[in-house]
Amino acid sequence: MKGCESCVVATIEAPYQVFQDRAFPDRRVVYRPFVLPRPMDRSYLRVVIEYKRRRFRKAYTGYVMTAFPVENKRKGDILLWSQFS
Image (cartoon, rainbow, N blue to C red):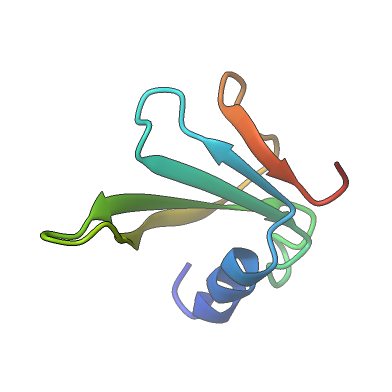
């Protein structure tokens, strides 16, 4: 995924769907289709973001853990938000 940082940023800024990871409640999984360059342009970009609570504050900070292309969304994750709902 080297060189696709702009695709990751675009996915976070304008996601297609946002899920909560079924095994890790502090992680969000963001999907966006058709954002990657060829030959992966028909795939979803899956971005996993982990949120940690900041010390002495009520705010959270998010970190991108990983990003990679997938053909299908993972089953079992909890849908939090969809662009078309």
